[in-house]
Amino acid sequence: SIKRTWWKESTVYQIYPASFKDSNGDGWGDLQGVISKLDYIKNLGVDIVWLSPILKSPQQDMGYDISDYRNIDTLYGDMDDHDALIKGLHERGLKYVLDLVVNHSSDQHPWFQQSRLSKDNPYRDWYIWRPAKYDEDGTRMPPNNWESAFSGSVWEWDETTQEYYLHLFAKGQPDLNWENPKVVAAVHEIIRFWLDRGVDGFRMDVINFISKEPGLPDGKITKPGFLQSGVEHFACGPRLHEYLKGIGEILREYDAFSVGEMPGVHDKNEILKGVGQDRGELAMAFNFEIVDLDHAPGSKWIPRQFEVKSLKQVVHKWQTFMLANGGWNAIYLENHDQSRTVSRYCSDSEEYRTISAKMLASHLGFQSGTLFVFQGQEWAQANVPRDWPLDKYKDIEVRNHWDEIMRKYPDDKELQERTKKQFWLIGRDNARTPVQWVGTEPYAGFTTENPSKKPWMDVHPDFRIWNAENAVADPDSAFHYWKKLLALRKKEKDTMIYGSFEMLDIDDDDVAAYVRTADSGRRALIIGNWKEKELWWPVPSPQADLLIDDGKLNDTTVLTEFRNYKDTNKVKVEDGKS
Ligand code: TEU
Image (cartoon, rainbow, N blue to C red):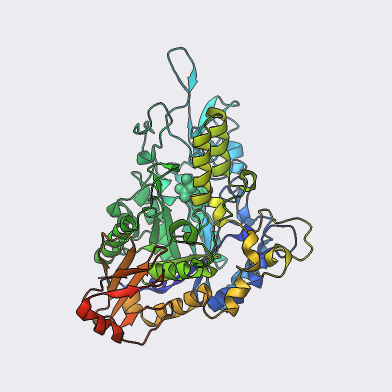
């Protein structure tokens, strides 16, 4: 059975610091900006705040390329600001989670700078170096066929020592060699360093990629004539759990929070090994099965039609499996790598936007697991405008892919149009526009009134209507809905957090409905209409004690109408209401 723990009952609010709040007018969000919004965050009712990377970085991949693991990047502030942030959070009873990026470092990190100097440098073996292969006509070839997440080979040729180094992400993000015990020890020291400074835990970037299969074999060929993902050789590799246990031991000493990001695996047993409550590894993991539904496997820019019924199958699978096997889920649909859910899955039209956001909040918020809310999600932030020109997109993933398309297929207009649509639908920039705080100031109050620089990314032009201030002022907004939901999650944890889970009518592609049942028998029935239409859905016979039926959370009413409907077995589920 599931052991009760504080972090299972917590909700995490994720901040993308570059886009959250700029306090000094340089167009880039910073730690003082975050500090100025702590009351807003507390008011929402979350328990933990996770900041995307703020450590020293050349920002090739927005801080996921760290060049000093023990210092704050000057873009964000300094150690004093960081201490003040921790203090401000702790004073409000909030915990603080740092983003630990240790599958790779920046190529500007002194370890890599040393490593690339010579083959006998003491740091050589801190990264993954391999000699070239040569084909029949003597052309130099990379050691294997793996493709980087950001286009091109994962191998970069280095002239100085005439070898390739491995980078699963950008060229500026060389992978650390975890086979080297010195690397493992260095990571442990970094973890202790921050825990001793008052950090309460970590989100661990692509943590299931740290153990690569020895020999680094070629990836399975799914796209003949192209580079291959190779993910089967580095996701959940042979020594992963040994490494996670090492980290887990330190975390337990401090009773620290942990969530591992685990892309590239949909196998529930694999993920359970990392998060099972008796395994001593991580508390929970982000799996990618839902966010992988609307694109081709291994190809983010090849669209695949999203179906509500597929999502329901995936939700049912992870909910029932983790509850039955002592694992734990991280519940999320938005983060800094995913687009805005109202636009992606439901509707961001004037009429349906708020109602979509509320429906999605209920869909997520009644599930078992630790809930994650991403900045802006709480007031129904939408994707970037559909007509945004490409040059407004800043993300290295989008930029590199577009360059590749223009190089290889300059005349294929159809491909270019399809790709641009996919950028709009699931590109990471959608999550990264500055937070819209108010409708009355230039740049939505993200930066100071007369900034020395424009925000690093354009503010969404809908900010005059859609912003946090309006949402807080309107009792019917998505913000207040989230707030009530999070409070209810505290009050009803036997049902909402620890109760059993059953997805209803799994083949229906319009409605996602499920039941949560506490040991006491108390039940919650959640009915969400995912489509922009009014529809009828037959309510099953079990009665609910908690039901959300009118876009308002009603935690005390035993739904009497529900009993009346029992005869006809039909309930009218209105326009995207849940
Ligand atoms: O992301 C890892 C990851 O696999 C993807 O979600 C990634 O964003 C990309 O879309 C792959 O197609 C993590 C971080 O969350 C991401 O921001 C970093 O860029 C990446 O690792 C490298 O550190």
